[in-house]
Image (cartoon, rainbow, N blue to C red; front, side, top):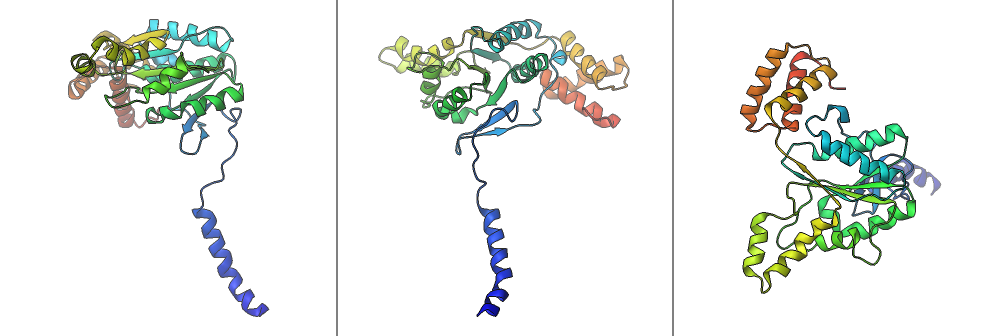
Length: 287
């Protein structure tokens, strides 16, 4: 009998190893001290650490000087334990809304290491906000809770979860958490949705007010708009200098201008995509 078992043992070990690989990883306790940035995994209730955040140095973000100053002052006050506002960064695509949030987090932590955690929540996970806020409050670490590209459609009721936790709910926002969101819409809902609510509701003003008032929960509204050609060239030149791209300024401008024609727009994102093209041609890395 023992001989038969010994023959089966290697097979059983292989089966056990295969089952271990198939099983989901064991969940560990959320620990905000293991990293400075995290992504909220709503399905498992886990904060996934992010070791290398995809971001650009704040000094390379041109044409948004006023927005940088206002957001820096607000974020610095929050990091110092002083009153600060939730912020809604709204405006045209590719103008640096999400980049400035990530860069500002890096700047504050460069001044005072580990001062702030950055936690990203996906727009579709907004209904899980109460659970996430409970975890963040329990941790005690001062945290920027960040939602990129936040908006709501006509049938979406999840905005009520956000509205309650920003202000107005029994618990509200924990003192160690601040909420920053980006959106292409100033009121987080499309203009045609607002007009449709007004035209079909029994009490049009009240129907619209319920959804539009969500944006009022943000103490800071920072607008981001399309940039001029001069600012676009400044961004390009800044990138080229930072990454050591050896190309004459006149040629750089001419090719950058041509690039905007192919893309149909002029923005910080378009400038970065152009620089990646040039760097690739020159065999340079953007590290």
